[in-house]
Image (cartoon, rainbow over all chains, first blue to last red; front, top):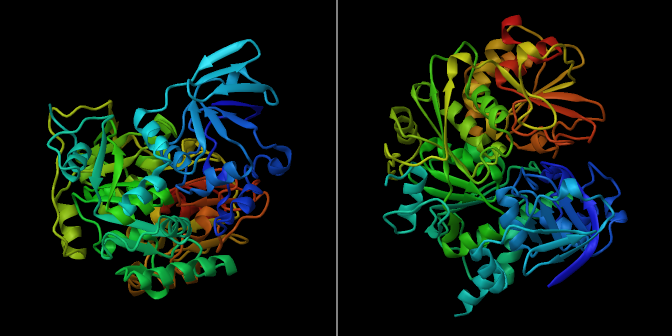
Length: 161
Length: 419
């Protein structure tokens, strides 16, 4: 699967309070959550970003709380993928459970915000300008889970059997 | 090949004799926890899959502690939904109102977690229960739904990092100062995906309350869990709070660790994590003059009786500095009552503090003590991210209760020896 999009760049340790501040956590509706995504760093992020855009970040993206509102808010803006040097553990599981793709690659220092980027999700190859980097492979167990349609579909199938 | 305490608990719950780091296992869980902000998403998934019930109504815990007493209509609607779910599925452990406390202080106190347990919670600070020699870790709402329905969930066995602590503790220094020291040393992703195991004579000397504080903040170093060896203090605590049978696991002498850190407790000072990362740690003495607007003493990190006792000792006979709000939040009704009986409430009220009902409230910028633009707080909580307690241009300094209380009196970040 090929994804092409424009880059929004963030730094290291982008925590869940930045991705979606806790004061909005009584909301569960994706659209409303999306409207406050990245608000502490970029108050009108939801207006500037276009569906298909991609977040590129440094290390430990998604650190902090277990709130699943974080990947929901990102996905609600039509962002299909986050590329980061590394991800916090709980965010990593949550994103896959919510259908937000994540790739681990250390490219934040070599790309600028606004640049066009192309990603082959199946091979993990990332291309921009004349650069090409292959992301760390998604763990085989996660791939299996994705092929089952995600954790919730996997559970549904089990309950129907 | 030996195993760590974390590996042994995971192996026993996966029905295996041996597990190793990196292995994916399917393990039985002893308890599944959610709160008023994570349960609503979990219940949506529960409905989507068409589940008929939870795996065991005695092993699902729902705690309405974050935005309670309900801060707005949305929060009230969420609690209503969860309350109805709890009634429909006959959930034994539903906490709201008078029996409710901050989840990670409440569950051990109610005896719901004991040594050897495997606990998952839709809250990142679920790792707190590692203080009891249990494996406990935070997950999202969807994983929690799976666990709540199946009574099992997948885990990747983590590598372990050992923190061997020796030496005598200096006066006033507690578990909060140790864990801030460690996070400052290894960084907010220094233990990413790993188990943080604490042992040594200095750890044995710590109270259970201090151990809960340390395990609580394992997530702030990226850790999957924090864990302690079971000793006499753990057993005394469990006997006093629980009737559940417990099982003691111990790391083998030849267990493998990714890293082993030697920590000299006698060299640890009273620490503060400056904005806006828990790893931005400085000792109070090297900090200089930092004026503050608010002090918060509470949370799942430091809202226990030891913490309130320390704060009371320092605040006794003193006044909160003019213009400063000092908010005290006993973490559970039992702690609340004990603090009242010990006379701490009189001390706090005489000093000019506000006493709040148990709630997570201000820690995550929910309610009950939000900061305005440009304001600065000292808090005994666990995170000081940008805008964590209010306006994106407000600041949070994390500290233990001794520094927080001293700071309330001085109106700036202060050492208790100054009082």
